[in-house]
Amino acid sequence: MLEIGGLNEGVVIDHIKAGGAMEIYSYLGLEKLDCSVAIIKNARSNKMGKKDIIKIEGPITVNLDILGVLDENITINIISDNKIAEKRMLKLPDMVTNVIKCRNPRCITSVEQELPHRFKLTDKENRVYRCMYCEQKFNRRRR
Image (cartoon, rainbow, N blue to C red):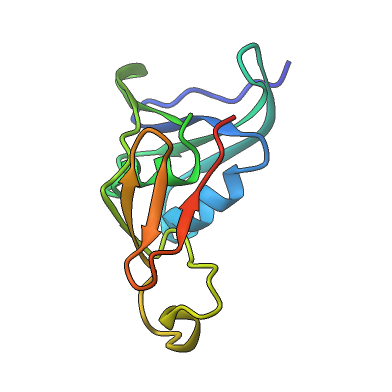
């Protein structure tokens, strides 16, 4: 059994779909942080079969709810004094910018590369976002 040391203070991003940790690592810009970050890939999970986990030492100031767009099953554990001080599920944000990209080749974002990719949540139950420029639909399938 693989064992990774505990955290005194920090954040654990848990229940990441197996293979998804690097996308989240990159999106959050964790390589820029001056703290320890552990990525556990393909950890055994009774609920999911396999999962990824990211452990971040110390507090971070990123809006973690945005990760719900990338993977709705993620849970966030805030660690304080070697204990889980807070466990939370993610809420889908109403608006996201530069998290997902518009796949419509006719969208203005395909031509104007510097424009931000902005999506609005239009159907919360089915996790559907639409491009603010061309109305292209984006939704991630539930597991």
